[in-house]
Amino acid sequence: MVGKNILIVDDEAPIREMIVVALEMAGYECLEAENTQQAHAIIVDRKPDLILLDWMLPGTSGIELARRLKRDELTGDIPIIMLTAKGEEDNKIQGLEVGADDYITKPFSPRELVARLKAVLRRAGPADSEGPIEVGGLLLDPISHRVTIDGKPAEMGPTEYRLLQFFMTHQERAYTRGQLLDQVWGGNVYVEERTVDVHIRRLRKALGEAYENLVQTVRGTGYRFSTKG
Image (cartoon, rainbow, N blue to C red):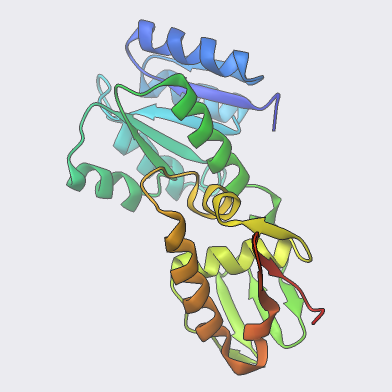
């Protein structure tokens, strides 16, 4: 993860500088743009690993650029974190609806930014681009985001899907609730550890009697996905 290129798109130079210092200290390489035109040229030329995109930009807004990037086949898989001074819920929803991967409201601490960025990069890692993963009659297709159980479509919510995808790509290892929050929810500080238990129950229910035992409770630790009893 270290050495990845991060594009910072913000028209305020002091904010860009603060972010560059924080990210370079964490081992990332930074690219900078002060408007969407510059950003688009850098994205096409350098294809960064992640984009930190300010909501309010002169000319074309950050949200418009995010929408354009997510629609384009060549740039649709680049993760985007929206930066904004707006804390209103509808703006957050609008950002996520156009395909932004996370959302961080100014002012934010460099530490929080780096934690969010790491989590988004992990979520966008190789697991998303691999072919279908199969365990017995349980099949997860990361391209179509579909899960089938013995050939029949399984009904599950997006969080249960991400949990299952993480488990199926990290089998036979126990994870704490905190680790699962960081990996699946993206280190979102507003989610309590008990939330993991709720979604584990929902995931087991979705897997049904034949496969619910693959998600095992590890006493004193958390959970593990295992084909061994």
